[in-house]
Image (tube, rainbow, N blue to C red; front, side, top):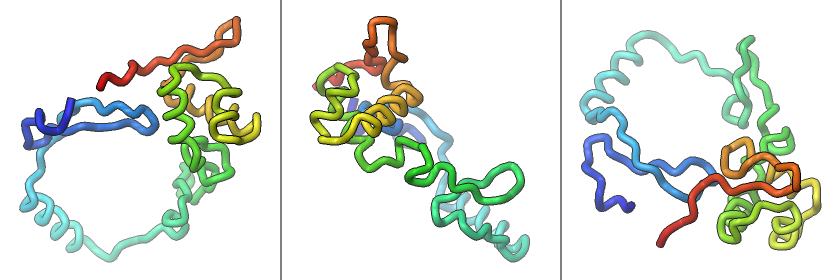
Length: 143
């Protein structure tokens, strides 16, 4: 499905991180005039209260403090610069194995394992079965 089949006024294609396949979704259409009116109203409500550190990639936790747990090195695989490449390799070969990712990206075992674990959390591949294999959950790309 391409963008030429979209109806407009909120009809869009959305590609979830790492999937490689867009899905068709429909969002609420908001005109430019509506956006400008809302912004004008919000500006009249008072001075902004900026949260320092949020622009450095931190995440706001429940206490209102900024946490850096999801920053690079903090355990979030999708922040790994090779995540999209690893997803592309897994989808192209239709096989999810640590050794496959290691060979193609020339990376170590631990990094490849983290990338595959993140793909599992993202719903791209299944958890490891008893025989050690993982199934590819997303459909094959049809071109």
